[in-house]
Length: 411
Ligand code: SAJ
Image (cartoon, rainbow, N blue to C red; front, side):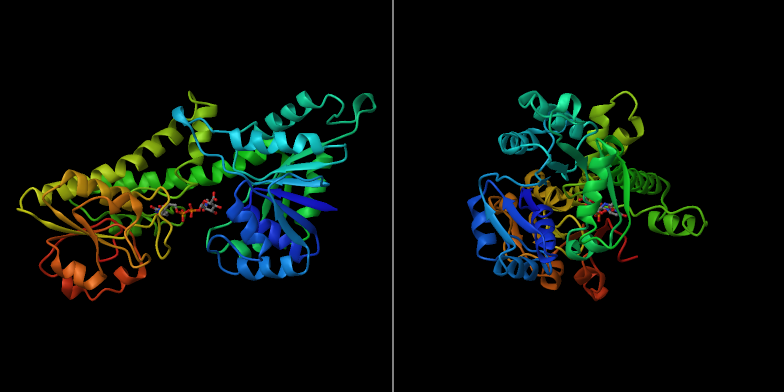
């Protein structure tokens, strides 16, 4: 069999590589020349531990190649982005484009797997698009028309641990038919050592969205508690630590907001599918999205008392010990600080980057600084990301500073 993986991003490329190193012939497809050329040289166009070894090995053995056109294949895995558009509805245009490129290649007998995180109904939508264009094919072989099968198999891997979690995480596989789910299971079993749970496609779509929404709602609860605790003059981190001593309570940690391209996005797919009923999920998103404003308000209270204050913003990434700035609340807070306080000098302290990111580079009152010298110059220190460099800081340097610790690392 030949597997075509459409979209060589941070999910598609690892999946392509791990199938290929397990003996499956894989053709990767991407619209970007940079991705295609890198893969064909046996290189990886982005950073992910261990991925480079897999790609280099698979390409040199002739099991993995990349191209821009969609080839004939027995199985197609679609792993393209699903961003959201205005009104928070999912944008399926990348899935549609991938499907449209597969359609002319179909002869019957193929399996199409949607891996992209998708709103409920996306796999059915994909099948409807195929059968509308190709009435000569069918889902069930009715009237003797050749069968094309469809399944949804969402990824659940954590960036930074992708090559490990592809093997060790359980997976959910939802088929439009039972046969489709079983056939997809046989494919994933080639490299996945964990359990593969079969269900229908819509349940699989919702399972992925539910996992990330669960985390978002729990973080929103912690963020709301942090605002309540401030009002009451108590320490939210101590409050949560104590409440979590209860055997059935497990509250996550508050912070300056929720970032990344998954947890801050996926819950909206549920909200836009059932707006009247997804009330808690929507409110959680709003609570988390409002948290940067709360942090900015605290800084403004302190900065208002000083002339030309120096403000150190600690961390730009969306979570600790990475350089990923996507949808990062720390980055947007730092930018807002600079824009709202033109008289202030903002020191951006991010040990995981070497230069100011584009979003900040154009702002005249922002400079990148090293941790200890930066803090030493500051009047106000705002901790936004719990990077190890900040956790392990010698606290003496904070002695005469006004400190806002959004992650509770210096309690
Ligand atoms: N955060 C908090 N408090 C917490 C935990 C997280 O404020 O107690 C914040 C982080 O700082 C960050 C954001 O939430 O800004 C998201 O970080 P994360 O580590 O929770 O998640 P991601 O986005 O890196 O990866 C998630 C994972 N999903 C779950 O844990 C349910 C991962 O398994 C998924 O594969 C990934 O989303 C995805 O691709 O959907």
